[in-house]
Image (cartoon, rainbow over all chains, first blue to last red; front, side, top):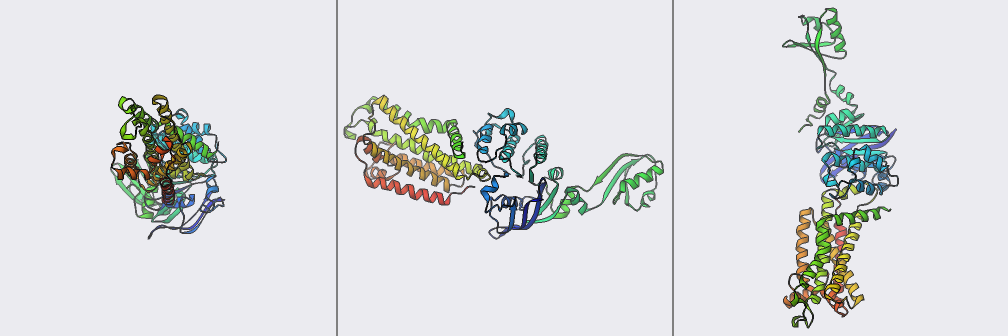
Amino acid sequence: MAIIEVEDLVKDYGSFRAVDGISFEVDEGEIFGILGPNGAGKTTTVECVEGLRSRDGGSVKVMGLDPERDGAELKQVLGIQLQESRLPDRIRVGEALDLYGSFYRQRADTDRLIEKLGLGGKRKTPFGKLSGGQQQRLSIALALVGNPRVAVLDELTTGLDPQARRDTWDLIEQVRDSGVTIILVTHFMDEAERLCDRIAVVDSGKIVALDTPAGLTARVSEEQRVRFRPSAAFPDALLLDLPEVARVERSGSHVVVTGGENLLQAVASVLARNHIVAAELRVEQVSLDDAFVALTGKSLDN
Amino acid sequence: MSALGKLIQIESRLFLRDPMSFTIGLLLPTVVLLGLGAVPMLREPSEDMGGQRFIDYFAPSTIVMAVGVIGLTNLPAVLATYREHGVLRRMRTTPIHPAKLLLAQLVVNIGASLASVLLVIVAGKLVFDVPLPQHALGFAIAFVLGITAVFALGMLVAAVAPTTRSATGLSTILFMATMFFGGVYLPRFMLPDAIATAGDYVPPGVQSLLDAWTGTAPAVVPLLVMAATAIAAGAVAARIFKWE
């Protein structure tokens, strides 16, 4: 069932149309990704969903509430983590959770929350003395302290080291497993691929594709590549005769076979029939990166 | 505890934890008064001040300092930082409007000014036998209107300044002017008459405080000017204040 419904959302900044007719639905319990390059309109879109910004057109419903009209009520059940939002340097971790917890009718068990986010030993540490990763985790904790049913997380692993990023991902999965629906705004492909059930690819204020990570890559190309080192020489024709195979290339002692669906199975059975062993066998698929470039004509890593 | 109560509690702790706001805001005016009082000559009655002792004459100026330091430098700096660092913005993501945080800041800073002023009055009385304010009602009115005007100006700075740096710059200028007209830098009998007279009308209104302190009812017009400043600055600040 859809817990968030966005239809024909439009937002202008002066004469610049930042969001240009975006529509999507998010199902309960889903991790929904909004992926796009900087300035694509991702943050503006979620800000309209959160009620932090007023929209210029379209309709938004979150749990049946209109973010603009029922803002205060919505914020009781919506957890929001903003990019680049600090706390006063001298506020302690425990105090911050206690304070933000007092804003909600239904507050989470702050002790459990602190433990779950790995801040158990930091209760008395001031915000300014926390590492970037710890500040980020506190920020997530504050978004969850009101026991939200929906959490919107904006660029939550930007600036974190690789270990902290993976820890944060595990955390997000735990949060989802506890029944919270999550909207994840990101410009990291690996993050979207790892976490999201569905991804809306946004570019220049429009959704250019909306699908599962696998669906997105399949949409761009069904092409697969199999690469291996054969134990004995064989003619290219052996493989080219297969309907699944499009091309056979040789690079050094390796053979690279390109083709469509079920490529690996077809190649492997022909080789087996001819008593050729495929060593160092590797299957390469189109990545979400490739899909993104194909969909938007842009690269994310800029 | 209610959200506002919690905010006031936490903001008070943050105020006390900040060595700058604590020492300069709370203690400096008293330290200045005690330091000047340590000079024997300043404890003798003097012709320049109509037979008053310098220390009695100067006490209201330390009140100007107490109110000015907190209302014109601490308050705008904290609020501008909160805006720049996204603290106000984060509040907007919760069911509690960030105006409650502003209110908590006002309560804490006004409380700190009161504590600072009380400290000056008590220290002056105990150490140098500076008499307590003689016209209690007049003093209370002059003080409340004066502090409201100063804090409204502080809020105006916080409202117009886009960054913490510009808030600090603006509030420093206002603070210096307030201190100058309030006779903190140079005792007012040494200032040209025109400047000393202008000082009657510059918040928080040092002459009204001095009059009430020495037992005369403060003049009405400067008090009205304080009230008008408070209303005008406060209204403009409320209108143009940006949360992010």
